[in-house]
Image 1 (cartoon, helix red, strand yellow):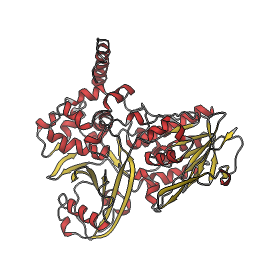
Image 2 (cartoon, rainbow, N blue to C red):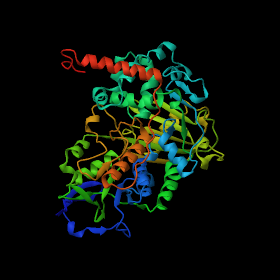
Image 3 (cartoon, rainbow, N blue to C red):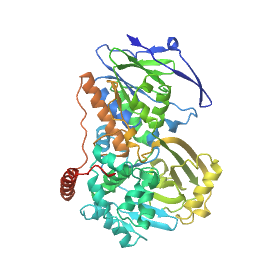
Length: 530
């Protein structure tokens, strides 16, 4: 028996004003000319996770349809959240670099050095670590980074934190142990100096986890910092995309998939799912008055998008795992692209900053040095991205530009003499994942209580160990493998594991596990809060 549960929201000016059941008005699509021998897979979302899943599945001979969401404002950028927030591609992104090789494209710059500024000026210069003598972790990062103002004693106060890094092994137990703690409390407990936290760690969190330390999970902090900074000296090295991610990577990637029969449908906002009560499987994906038949579904959308679907879905709102997602949160992002009337010298192409607002982390980039389209421009083109920018989104463009220029003039010589001749300001509400304390228990795994519905994204629980874009892509491949397993067709995607840990880290982890096993056997071991 096919049970058609569907609730279609009536929207006016972006606010939900009522609901009406119109199952008889739904138009059915068979996702193109159907080959009866091919199983149909619908992928919801076209970021790193969605494209990663679609890429492998279409190569396995499935009939794959990717549904790309639209936006009320018509902004093209809102279709591509993976262009928002983090733009760098770090050394450990082994799966993404392998994909780029497979596609035979060259979207990246050379390895790039960077700098960090505070209100007082230049604080840190990050070299290209792989070009330097390789030291055991964390000594390479600690001693090869050029700290302009930070005394050695403050830097050494970071060493006790390695005890927590060793203890956090990315297991479910470790996540639950540290997730209820804030990052600030973590650094305080392990003796981090106030200056090191204020001038280095907190700004890194505001551009890596997109929120200040008191609003970041300690578990997410340990996972992210270890993956891109502490695991190996060279892991903090990164390249930049030589244009937008959409233009340089996603478009050629999608063209490649089209040659393998993958279909991309733009402006398709998923509103609900139909499921077969006899099998418990999703049978159709609903987009307004249209529906797309599916033998398997991969959902690869950001949290705020999924929350909208859940709130309007009679199918998903009956399941506890999806209701828990409503407890999660997204982070607002503001991007400001400025074209000046002259050339000014920006020492480093990539820069992180603190001090714009108390709770707002930001970065700025010299696009003349990064993007191909601006390399020969006679004037400077730069971009500033602001994370946790809820206080900025409502400001008028003119005020935002004035604030940005005033702040940048503290770091860039002669910028106060330049004028802005063109500007592009984009607002992305709730577009990035907020790993707040206690969020882990609400996050989903890749599989769901619907046997043929699988999840992917940077907020999905996975034991791979990667973060940011690499984690999104890896969870997309994991979802594709789950589809292959469920449909019992095709081969599994090869997922490259993170690089093996250095021998002394492995030894310390083994010792730590033994210690924890002994401790757990002691009387009253579970009496006190962990």
